[in-house]
Amino acid sequence: MKKIFAAAWLVAALLFIYLPIMLLALYSFTTSPQLGTIREFSFHNYVTLFTTPELRKMIIGTFTLAVVSALIATVLGASGAIGAFYSGKLSKAAIHGMNHIPVINADVVTGFSICIFLIVVLNLNKETYIPLVIGHVVLSAPFVYLSVVPKLKQMDESIYEAALDMGATPLRAIVKVILPQILSGIFSGFMIAVTLSLDDYFVATYTKPATFDTISTYVVNATKGAQTNIKTALWALSTVIFIVVVLVVVIMNLMGGKEKDRYEEI
Image (cartoon, rainbow, N blue to C red):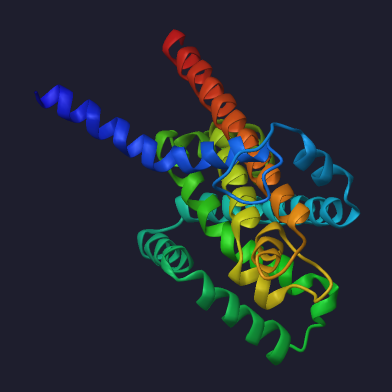
C-alpha cells in the first residue's frame, strides 16, 4: 500500500506540474482563439511566431540579453567561487553570506534597487541597455557561484599548489588545472543564468529601455490588449521554450552520466 500511495502521489504531482504545459502545447497546434474549445489543428501559431517582425525582434533580443548577461555572470560567479574556495575561513564565510542575500532576496526588491542606484544615483542612461545587463548579471551571478562551489569541494584543493610548485603561473594553474575539474559546474551555472534571464520580469521592467521588451515583459503586456493572433503565437513560443529546456536537461544528464562513468573507470 505504501508503494501504491507513493506512486499515486508522484503521478499526481507530475500531472499537476506538467498537465497545464501539455494543454498549452496542445492548443498551440490549433486555430482556437482562446483556451477551452479546440477547432482544427494547424501550425498557424508557429508561422505567426517566426514571421512576425515584432515577435522575432523580441525573441532575438531576449536570447541575446540572456547569453551576454549569462557569460558575464558565469565569469564573475566562477571567479568568486574559486577565490572563496582558496580564501581563509572568515573571508569564505563572508563571501558565502553575501552571495546568499541576492538569492533569497525578492526579485522586485533587486530590480527596484538596481534601478534607483544605476539610473537615479549614478545617472546612467536607461536607453544604453547597461542597467538592464547589470541587473541580469546581479540576478544570476550568485546562482553560478552556487553551481561551481560543489564541484570545487569535490576537487582536491592541493592540486593548485602542486601546479604552482611545478612551475605554473597562478593564471595557468587555474586555466589548466582548476577549470577542467569544475567545467560541468560552470556549464550548469551558465545554463541557470540563461534561464533566469529568460524568466525575469521585475528586473527587466525597472531597467529596460522603453523600446525594448523581453519575453516576460512582452507576454505581460500582450495580455492587456494585444491582437488575438499575437496572443496565440505566444502559446507556440511557450511550447518551443519548454521543448528546448527539456532537450537541454536531457543533454546535461547524458553528459553527467558519461562523466560519472569515466570517473568510475578511472
